Length: 219
Image (cartoon, rainbow, N blue to C red):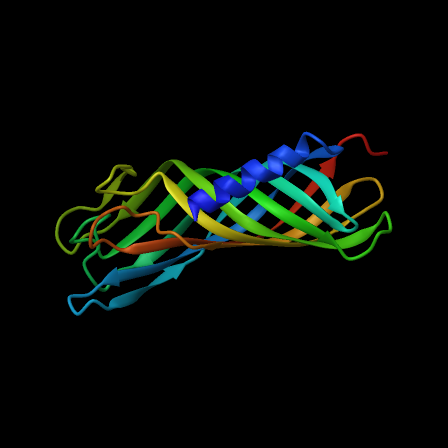
């Protein structure tokens, strides 16, 4: 997934150098959670219940026309994600005795997406989709244990703990005005676990939100 995303990005960036490109900024709120499952001895897994947390995203976007109503539309942005999970099975991380976990993680995300406009008029609806790679910058977790005091600590990133990188699929649906103002709903579907631990839980980001943005050099 990560290698394919990188190859796709290199090809698209080569095109950017040969085409007229627009640039802009965007920001908005989001509700985030996770798909969380713990491994079992019989090689199966047990899904753990998670609850939403609220965060936001913001960053820069670009757009170049391929042909007609199809565009290459990459974005780089900060995203605050997280989840609350109730654990019914041992899970490390955070701890084999943990009975829950409240996680907030700050990420930097790169998304080489494609955009399709439903109309060639200046004001139009659009759909945007593609992969993304996110770098887990830092985070915080708070959990209770079946015995002992509650724990609040920084997330640990290593080969035996949380991983620095995740992979996602993104979907945007929105509207753009003739002045370059955009509003869009967005969904993030994690496809790679953010946990590196052997026999550890599988944790994949989920997020849904609403953002607004503006392309430069528009009146």
